[in-house]
Length: 164
Ligand SMILES: [Zn+2]
Image (cartoon, rainbow, N blue to C red; front, side, top):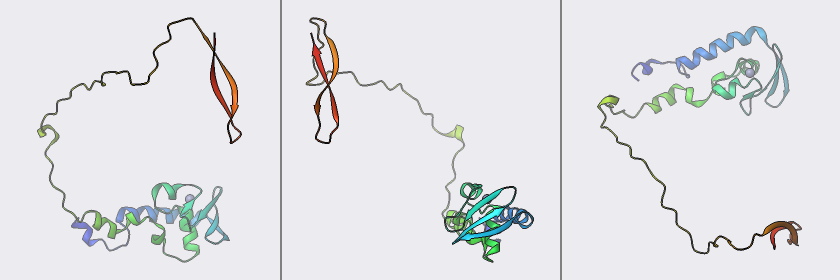
């Protein structure tokens, strides 16, 4: 935490390193074509679609990592904007300081924790509920499914019919 107080950039150093690497890649490979609104076609090894409004790229690196993909950086640079505005807020130094602003209590080593004994949990005893029909023990009967009624909505209701 104390070391982070010396961070001068807006993004954490690790996030900035990722962005720098992706920017280097974006400089030489991409041709940027504006489509409309915040949407761009980026022509690299194939055509990627970047949407700066929804923070998405068809390569899906941006959605998965939270940091702009090289295609998105190419589009942002084309607009002469700051790429940090298109990175997840959790990669900023400000959020890092907020996350670690509360003290963490020390934890004992796992072997020093009190022993926990496990008991086998058994299901509750089965009980017949009220209204449950007794098993039919008389003559053998066969059941057939038949269409007997029409519900108001026009759906067919399937009901059971006993045939002796
Ligand atoms: Zn991409």
